[in-house]
Image 1 (cartoon, rainbow, N blue to C red):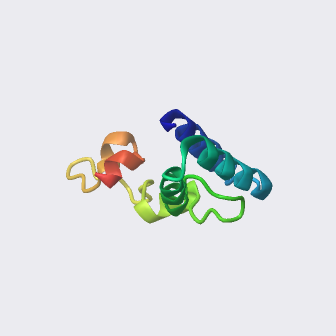
Image 2: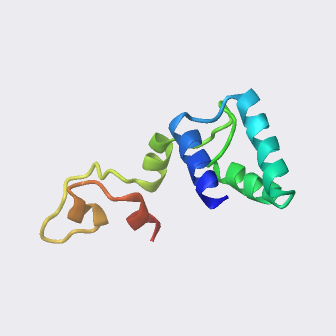
Length: 99
């Protein structure tokens, strides 16, 4: 089930959601195959924006990039760096910013 959820999440993120008809069918198939406890997993993925219908996705990478300030627009001070993007040439990886 874990590999399936990862694949569904990746597909949903790349395609900016799953078509409505397909989304409902996938959800029904997962519940039938893995049982009612999978509803919690599907709900959590939807809340996080990892698996959702097309048009329902609220966060795109550009929005995340702006919110987390992944690209440093200011000139880099090589003598006294104040942002982690100094080490990555002006871009800070998401995982580093979250930590």
